[in-house]
Image (tube, rainbow, N blue to C red; front, side):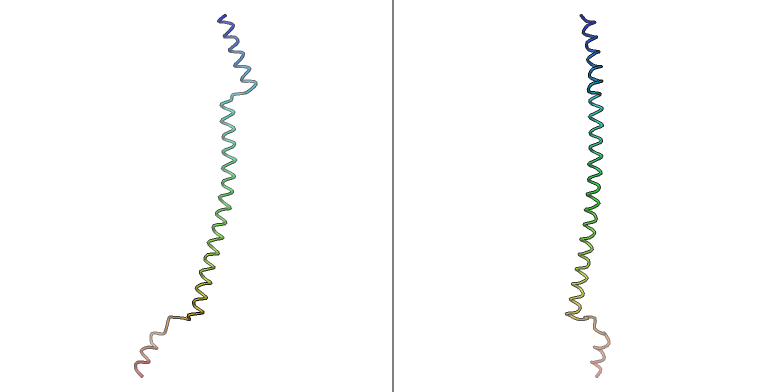
Amino acid sequence: MSKSIGKLTHELKDWTKYVYGYITTRKRDLIKRIANIQRKRDLSVDLSLCQELEDALHHEELLWKQKARCDWLKLGDQNTNPYSYSAKEEK
C-alpha cells in the first residue's frame, strides 16, 4: 500500500509538472513580464508628461515676457537718467 501511494504521488507530481508546468515559476515569469510592460508603459507616459510640463513652462515664460512687455509699453521706462535731476537743480 505504501509503495502504491508513493508511486501515485510521483505520477501525480509528474502529471502536474507536464500539464501545468511549474506554477510558481510560471507565475513569477508572468508577473515579471507584466511588470516590464507596465514599466515601459509608465515610462512612455512619464516622457509625455515631461514634454507637456516643458511646454507649459515655456508658455508660462512667454506669458510673463508678454506681460512685462505690456507693462513696459504702458508705464514706460522707469529708469530715469540720474543726471537729469541734478541738471534741473542747477538751473
